[in-house]
Length: 260
Image (cartoon, helix red, strand yellow):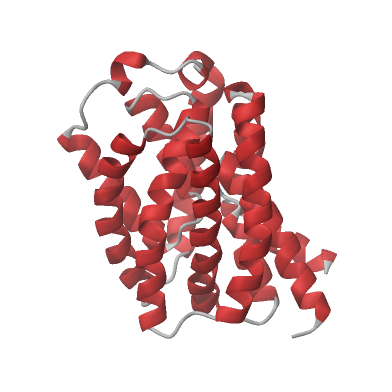
């Protein structure tokens, strides 16, 4: 492996770990980098799951250390996500994702309107919702998100954050902590599916994970230190870039390619 490949993987991993921990959508960078380095899209999708698993393990450890993680409720919400993600990963080995990308781009832009219009729900949290037991509809919703997460993973953080803030009443910092716990719960299962289909490049995945861990460590500590307001504006910027990419307004992959 050439040194330039190592640099590309680690730098892209740092960006992905930082963005995914604070918001979501950063995975488009790592997928683009892996494809740029010559991996087929399906193997890039599988390889990325190594870095995601290790990255979220790092973030969860930081959030738990600072006592901002609701482990009990996060584990309950993570169970339907795991089940859905296994189904989604199986689908990902046989189907293209272009149509899904357009749909997700529109939905995420719509979601940003709530981030801007109702900031108090994202910044302060709602205790009465946090204390409420998990409902049947939440189990169903998180199962559906699991299917998407297993299928593509790109942007799953937005949907988890929206559901955890608007449905479960967390502020953005606590929602981020629960989000990374849920991703940590399902990521190993989806990785296993891709491994069974021989769609993982272990060398690239482990090197990418080094960058992801560095980015996740930085973002987790910033999230706790700077608070929900900081996380909210990071989300707004990342959502705009990510949505414009999915809708074809800008092309993140070509921008990354021109840099290297």
